[in-house]
Length: 45
Image 1 (cartoon, rainbow, N blue to C red):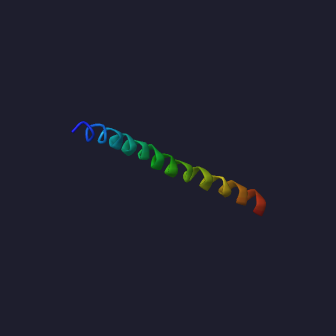
Image 2 (cartoon, one colour; image 1 turned 120 degrees about the vertical axis):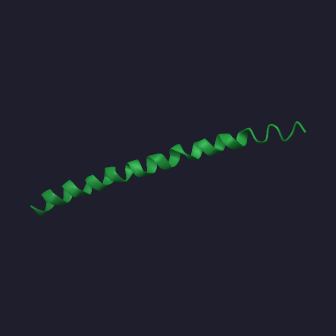
Image 3 (cartoon, helix red, strand yellow; image 1 turned 180 degrees about the vertical axis):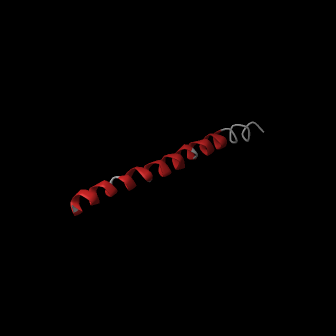
């Protein structure tokens, strides 16, 4: 019986760890998108 108790503990810990991961993904998307924009403008002119 004491074995199943510690098992569920580490399980919930891994769940919140994946939450912050996807949050940084969309944040980096808009950043690089604006970089190539200004670069293409001066290169054309």
